[in-house]
Amino acid sequence: MADRDGIATHRAATARSAAPVMAQVEVIAPHIKRRLSGVTSTVIQLVPIQARSLGITTIGPGLPDHLPKMRWWQVFSLLKRPRSGRKRIWHARRNIEMLAGLVLKSIFRAPLSLVFTSAGQRDHTRWTKFLIRRMDAVIATSSKAAAYLKVPSTVVMHGVDTDRFTPPKDKAAALKALGLDPTQNYVGCFGRVRHQKGVDLFVEAMVELLPSRPGWSAVISGRTTVQHAEFEQKLKDQAAAAGLADRILFVGEVPDITPWFGAMSLYIAPQRWEGFGLTPLEAMSSGVPVVATDVGAFSELVVEGVTGNVVAREDLPAIVACAGRFMDDDAARQVAAEAALAHARANFPLRREADGIRQVYDKVWAGRGA
Image 1 (cartoon, rainbow, N blue to C red):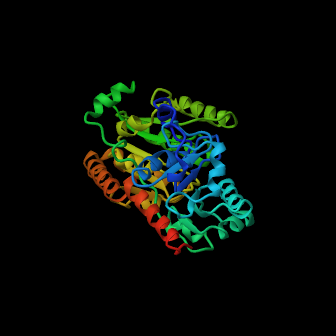
Image 2 (spheres, one colour):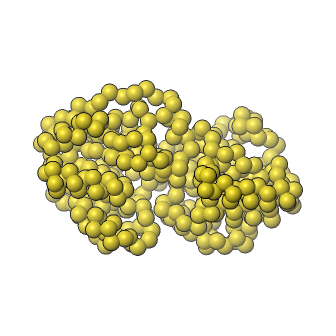
Image 3 (cartoon, rainbow, N blue to C red):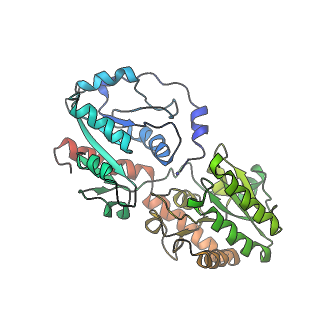
């Protein structure tokens, strides 16, 4: 999920793990970046599932201590094969991680196979293309991302923790626990507060929709960095000028975003650009219909007219129209909510993502990589 809310909760709730026994480790999931991101969330959610049937460890900063984590001094152990005799897989998700794996393999002659997961939906730079061409296998997180790759790839879409993101048993109680009004319906927009994420489009839509719908309010949650503080303040001023300061709520970055998804009655993902974008999945898994722009993998996640709507990027009138229909029709919203929940559980559980990645690993080990 973008700088993922809830990662701090995972980190605070766990104890420091012991250094792994490297002879048993066959997969390395590097995380060579301190700032939390969607990649961080992916590693945090997937590695524990993968570890149930695979010797896997992480390396790098910014990850919670409950994950298996090799120490930097153990890097020397990568120069030897694990006990299984197979080459270890170095599964990179960033350029710096591809480079690190390439250095280990090409310069230090570590017996590694290199796998890269690409979520980007843009023409890659020459440097990125150079690195990708040297991977043994490439995974794309969506069909759109695969279209930008100039090498063979396997599409393995991200999944969602359907046990964590699930509808609350009592929505009124869930709202009250978050300090929200249990008599109101809420529409949410979660993620980093910045222009790229389309938060201004969300605020503009709410300024148009809420005055004639007194039973609805809006929630914006996410981290605002220093360089985007002015952007956020302008949005708060816009809400206040419309007389909606008490109904367009900026709650900031929360320790755990999970209950906030379940407390919503509608979710809007108004991004202008996105690599993949997990929030629509998290909303649907929480039993919430979604209105999303056609960026990232959103059109591959949301079933048009069934679990919500997908509209053109920056199409504010379409966002307003689709959101307004859901806000005005309780029955249609409930049908979409039930369809969204069933769709997420059937097609996007984390287990399916882990299985798809494992199939790529097995092909690499069988000598049938890219």
